[in-house]
Image: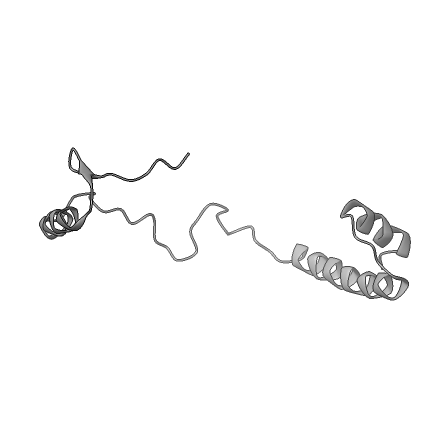
Amino acid sequence: MISKKEVQHIAQLARLGLSKKETEKMQKDLSSVLDYVEKLKEVDVSGVDVYSPLDGLGNVMREDRIKKESKKKDKKLLELAPEKKNGYLKVKQVL
């Protein structure tokens, strides 16, 4: 079991102010987490590839292209804009 002194040290590193009651609760909680980690160390993972994706899929890539419909929509939107310059919307300076 993790000591109260260790819990207070961790709390100090995390800049947490813990009461005595909170320190005791954290002591129990951190101890249970560390016990669970120890259980996980017992699992045999020798046959598991470290870098294999879980779902068996790799990156799904698609070709980046402009659709004809979007060009038509863009023209309609530009027509509705109050100000435009060189085919772009003209807006007030942000900075």
